[in-house]
Length: 162
Image 1 (cartoon, rainbow, N blue to C red):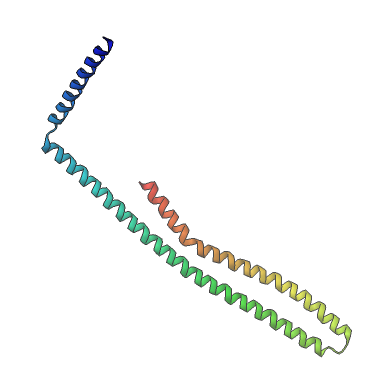
Image 2 (image 1 turned 120 degrees about the vertical axis):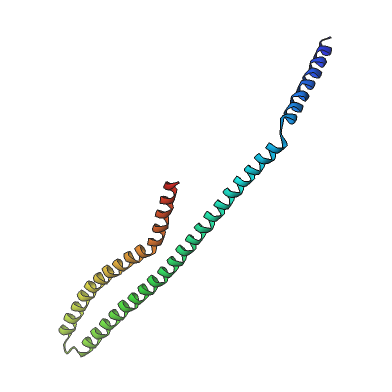
């Protein structure tokens, strides 16, 4: 008996659910539905186009940034290489001059004085060269990071504007 009541209630609920669904389907106006779908499709299309345009613009910016970084890196690398060669040349010339002076020394005491002066001058020159090279590498790092900083600042500005 309980089962029979449950079956009757289930049939009643099924019929009510079918009526509700039928009413919803009949209540839809095809003209309004297609207009709404068209509006949604156009809006989605506009959003997709906007996103693609922004993506393309950002990709172009990234490409320009990378090109600038590579050009800067090449210039900085060349400058550091030239500076290194110049420092090595200076050190080699100083060592060769010192060797000539040692060979020309007439007494061991003169050779000892020449050697001690050379070592002092070499140490001073080494410290000065290290300062110059440090300043050069700091400027190089600033030059290399400038394009990245510019792009990040632009991205932050664009993000804050939206």
